[in-house]
Length: 109
Image (cartoon, rainbow, N blue to C red):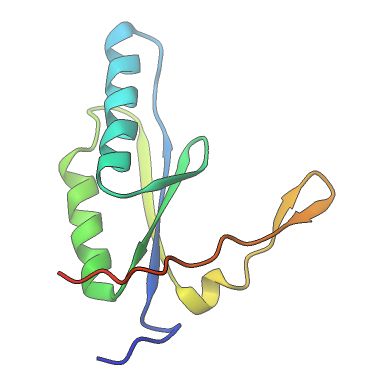
């Protein structure tokens, strides 16, 4: 299979989890830890991203996230192609922030 910017995907996980009780805070912390264990990186505090070599790999990452969803709160999963991701502009105050380079290592599984 040919790798190109339309087949390579980025998986975003957005969430808003309750932190009212000790149990809620523990669930939120465990959710973040599981995202990191699954290869996601923090993009913003409640937004994590992960590179996927294909739509099938993105399916696997999405299934993994669904398996450790917390009992309460809102979680959204969005996929964009690498080409679409390349159009994103990030700002640090009024200055444009340089884009993160895509991972050099290919995923094979």
